[in-house]
Amino acid sequence: MQVHSMEFKARAGQKLADQRLQQNLKKLSTKFVTARADAIRDIDFDATRAALKERRNRALENLDVWLAKFEENATKRGATVLFAETTADAARLVGEIAQKHGVKKVIKSKSMVTEEMRLNQVLGEMGVQSIETDLGEYILQINDAEPPSHIIAPVIHKDKDEIADLFARVHNKPRLTDIPEMTREAREVLRPEFLSADMGVTGGNFIIAETGSVAVVTNEGNEGMCTIMPRVHVAVTGIEKVLPTLEDLATVMRLLPRSATGQAISNYFSLLTGPRAAGEQDGPEHMYFVLVDGGRSGLIGGEFQEMLRCIRCGACMNHCPVYQKIGGHAYGWVYPGPMGSVLTPSYVGLANAVDLPQAATLCGECNRVCPASIPLSDLLRKLREKQMERGLRPWQERMALQVWGYVARRPDLYAFVTRLGARLMARMGGRGKLISRLPMAGRGWTDTRDMPAPSGRTFRELYKERRAR
Ligand code: SF4
Image (cartoon, rainbow, N blue to C red; front, side):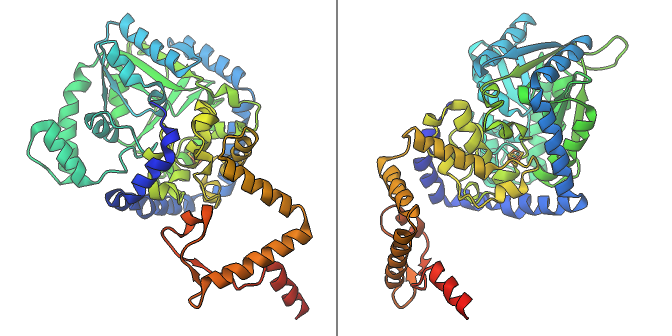
């Protein structure tokens, strides 16, 4: 997927003005947020996520060891393990596998890493047809290869009517508006593709070092069709997704579906180990793993290593007040929301995503819900510091912060300036005690709402007064 993160501000403005999108994004709070809150009541969330953090850290601290162990065990079970340094290398490797086996048609289940790799485009350029089979991804593919806007619900930005129009136009059939009927129609279109494909490509939620297996989680069962029916299966995932043991997987799986969709367990969960062995009824003749670095190893041992614990549940975006208003396309790359605002600058370069660390209110809601205990707001703040150090923010912003830093380090001057500011803002509020237009950079805050004017006295003054009483 091309990087458009430098267009964040312009895109966010367009998304805010899109009333249909605003309506569609309400599903985040009415569906996902509520479902997660209900689902985590069944478990001791804090204790389970502490266990998950410990297990993911154990894997990441010795990533090379666990990847070597995975390679050894997967190879023993007859799979071929390939490592790709860049996402372009990974796409080339998948293309070479297709060529080696004379593949003309690929069926895919949802994988965000393959979005990083632009796999569909690369395969298309090689003359290999690649068909998305996750319903959301399929809808996007037939809509001129539109990119996903959410890592779990790729088509959340669309409503039923838009999809009904799209199906009627592309499938050339009468327009249906009943969701089960629409799903059946998509299934009828996809079924012959499953039957005629030579190769299946899936993501891998996790790979397990002790068994050489890949765990694939879906709600539609399409991953089963992609891995069992074609003669070749390629599982593509990031190198950070390795877990040492099946017990680690069990811990992670207690939180992944609950955090993602509010389910205790997903509808389908496959644990696949090696190609079809002698005497087995199903499974591919050939199985490959393509394990992608794509910038991940650059985070190891650094201040952003914690980000590699991410299990791609999407909870941080579902709960983010910024994502809830603008959706995923505004972020301009594969990963949106708070996790994307950390990952995108880390993978594509801070200079190519300068507005993403700012795309957060730092309210901490993402930290609260993250099942991997990733301190997202701290990481976003660190990225902001780096932007300042490297002069990547506009000069006015840098100067304003320098002035602020100068004042904040001098208590008397600070007291004087805040006193002056509080008095001035109280006056700006007038009789209604509401400020309808803040000057300069504050203008954005009052574009869509009024700001309650402060009382005219500073916190310190009020605190002193209260202690005196
Ligand atoms: S950062 Fe946390 S909440 Fe966000 S997708 Fe990753 S694991 Fe889920």
